[in-house]
Amino acid sequence: MPFRIKVSLAIILLLVVSVVVVPLVVPISPPPDTVPLPAAVARAARPNGRLVRAEGVDLYTLDTPYAGAGEAPLTFVLLHGYASNAFSFDAVTAGLAQLGAVMAFDRPGFGLAGRPLPADFAPGTNPYSQDAQVAQTVALLERLPPGRVVVVGVNSGGVLALELASRHPELVSGLVLVGTPAYLLGQGRGAPGWLLATPQMRRIGPALMRQVAGPPGTQMYEGAWFDPTAITPAQRAARAVGTTVDGWDEALWQVSRVGAPASLAGRVADVTTPTLVLAGAAPGSVPLAESERLAAELPHATLVQLQECGDLPQEECPQQFVDVTTAWLRSGALPAR
Image 1: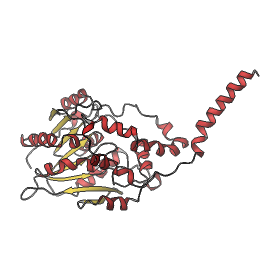
Image 2: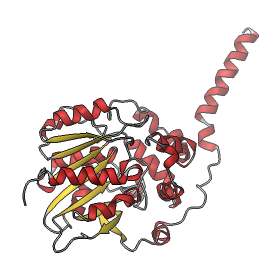
Image 3: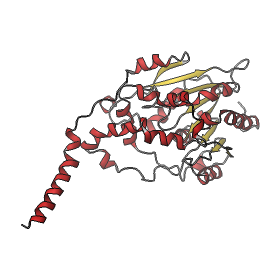
Image 4: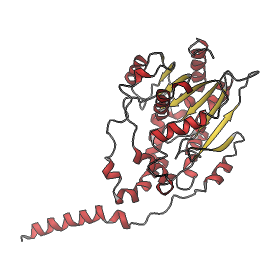
């Protein structure tokens, strides 16, 4: 066999060994500076925060009572997006509480919510799937006092809100959808499922997820802002709270393995819930055409393009967010009780 062919075969063999074997044997240390979930919750020191069991998963909720007199006319339920948490709504909670009670919660694998691993899953279930998260949200809604509920969803939280309203319209009186990629998701742009299921990826996947706490995650967060120089140290710290919990990287890997939920294309028109669609104007914002299509296909929707604000208005322009939401509600958008 010619020498060059031998060298080529040796290089190919070396590459195969590197790809197949190295991920299985390379040492991987746990992420630094993490604590068990109860300790992380105690460290947050939020008097209105607590862990609530829903469909077998601990969800961290922040409950704020109605600031007005008498019974709350409605309740806001706030759903954060990917790699975020309930603290992202801090700047709008007081304003929304002038209109009704407010409940924000951390979705599984994020913030201070539970991080179940495959060994903990009930047979045939995955608590990170869209079906499971709809069921978890329903469980929380059913614990609320009787009355109207407005579900606010940001990015993937908006997709979850739409799915919730589609399946359980009787539980949702109104929707506020912020930067919601209803049609972009589920288009197969991620890694194929077979690759994510390989032993090599199962082992190194959690370590790859740690990029969320590094420059790639920072770039993703800043890209959702119209003016990233306005991000405060407190906002960065609040966003990172989920990376202080033991096993956060493994949980985020489980979220990623689930993949994006199926596109809502073809089903949006069936959602008759009154809806406010908010579109941002940052470089990393969901394209305006996506929000325009969503508002056009929803039977009872109002579209507002935010001024000098990105896809995280609850953080970047909280007063504009509250003002637009208040005006929409006071326009009589919701049905009477």
